Length: 110
Length: 329
Image (cartoon, each protein chain N blue to C red):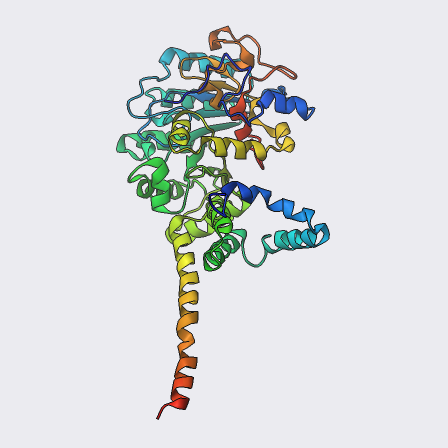
């Protein structure tokens, strides 16, 4: 195996049902319902999915939702802004923990 | 240029992709039949001359193309429309505005059909000398179908070329000022959005809603309907797909989205498509492959009866474009 990630493996996702079909069915039904048009449009949901895909750094999801965003009518500028949102939250999550550092340091410092 | 097989050899896969079933065999496997119904529409391609060289153009139209419909063929078209009552006549190109006989064609066809359509790229018609044509279109209540792939300038211009977006917006403003695209004006303005790459279009309804909202919000523009069409892997788009290594995945994606429900509404069942030099085809895409109507080369001057129910339609693997997802009708 040259790499753990093979693009062709994305098409095998449904095969995960073979291990626990009932659980997989529940998951894929839920997944389909989540991405249906609702209070948020499918285009907006796809941009959120793209941002989350970068936050969790899933190559399958990045591949799938880059294509899906374009198909839903988004452009690369919008997709880039969405990734910056994920980046800001990830970076912010680290930085905001600086408050804990300051609490600890403050407590034990003169 | 592409490495397509000749259209005459349709026994094997047009794109030479091992995993691709031929379109004809796919119909057979699914127990489906694709034949003609009553012919209601005449589509007239008045030439391959165009002021743009769009990357998705299946006919490779552009400024250097010399193929343009002659006055003699224009007269043949007018005679044909007088002989047979077409509900719709659809003028396309190239940029139809650049054919020197376009006004003659519009004037003579308008009284002979319920709906006369002119397909515009929104830039050729922006030239000053096209003002009389614009006025003629409005006076004859000709429906305009205009290309606008994206609401984003950069994305749109990757397909249609530099400076095309701003000109298109200016032309849409002009059309709106004439009444085109406004409610109850009787002047219909419809938009077409083709994907700007090797991906499929989304739900027509969702894209239409977004275009309606954003065009109104950003530029105060109105239109009647928006259509989304997948790009056919032919002509200049095919060359791009091959050059970027996208051909196989794109064509297989089209084939994987084959939807039998689209067959009933396919345009090739009720339309005849005429090339700039007067030959008959089942659709404009087939012109790119010299795939003549029903598989037989026939000129407009030899057409004494329209094709009718159960007559055959020439197909090949590019037909997966029109049967993918919601289809292309």
